[in-house]
Image (cartoon, rainbow, N blue to C red; front, side, top):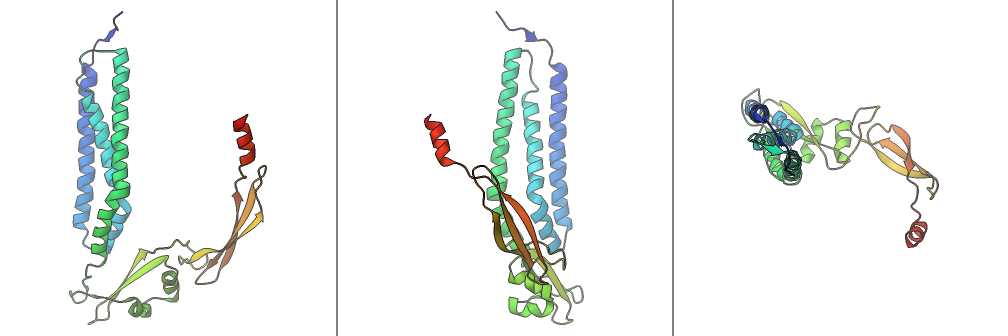
Length: 250
């Protein structure tokens, strides 16, 4: 028995093409807006922060829009199609879109950051121009910059949670201090607000068993002001390996 064809796809074909063009246009506009903002941002630190914070997300959004647009356009030339083949076509389109999306996501997550890192490094160490003289400023070494950092900033650098760059106009003494993420994670201290609040030690209050969760207490201490705090965390129950093997054998 032959499948009953769906009679008319004219309306779908028209609107699918319109949506495909619209989504592609939106992706192009978002990308152009990003490029224009980059071109219009003259301050290297502002541009650094914007690229670091937004570029990968913007490229991912544009990619998703283009993938959806491609799927719609590829299915906007249907003349006559049975119900079964309609579901097959929808399934194949969604599957291909997901595969392409995962590939793009992995490229942006694992490979594109290497390209971004080169651009960010170039922006970070690009000579800053003094607003006082219009001449390039000097980037101070780690030893020289401590004179311009307060004790809290120095504490942040000592635990590698934050890294500061200090640029100085040697003619006028004008200084510019820029803040960058460090190598190690530290929280913002609720007392002094510096990013020097870290776990100092951990204490197991109750060991977990195969029937009950355990309890862990983390002790936090600020490396600058000395503020201390503690917080309790649950420890997952232990997996009974012997019982599992017995069950599996049975």
